[in-house]
Image (cartoon, rainbow, N blue to C red):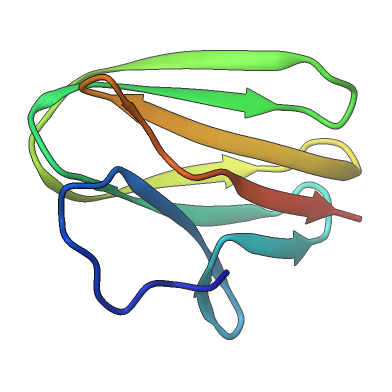
Length: 101
C-alpha cells in the first residue's frame, strides 16, 4: 500500500518518507534517521509503539495533540524490520514497516 492521495479524514493514518515519496514501507541503512508522518483526525493524546527486530517493544506517550498532520523522526538502531503503530482517541493507525540493513 502506498500513500493515500485522498481519504475520509476520520482515520488515524501513518506513512514513512522514502526516496520516491510517502509509503507504508521503507528500506534504509541502520543508524539513519527518517521522518514518519501521521494524520490525526481529532484531539487526544498520541502514543506510539515501536517494535524492534528482536521483538522488544518501545511505547512512547506524547502530550495531547490537535487534529492534522504531525511529523515524528525515526531511527533504526539495529538491522532488521521495525514495525510502528500509533494510537490516539481510541483509534489505532495502520502499521509502518521499516527494514534497516
